Image (cartoon, rainbow, N blue to C red; front, side, top):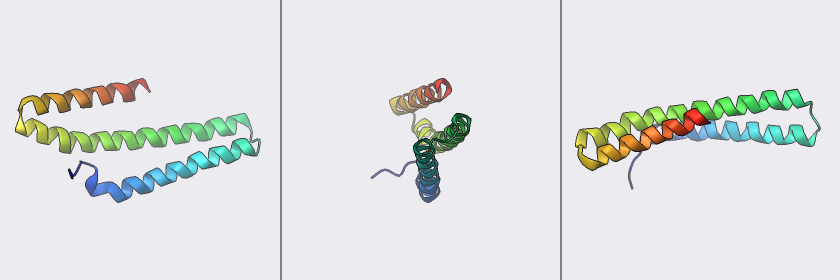
Length: 95
């Protein structure tokens, strides 16, 4: 099985995702409890920022590991990895 760029920080990533999951559950409780709209929107913004931060961290690791290794090897794999990274960046910018 391949070891991806995030492998060395897998535990930290999982902990971060669990915290985000907890934030989303908190949003569900807020709606169930009829919380004030602005408070829900504020928490939604916090969850969105947390996910964006996670995505940027994962992207950085991908560039340093997967893309860098592919560039070192050259050939079509390098082109594919650069294209994938560019497409991922475009998706993040649009979101």
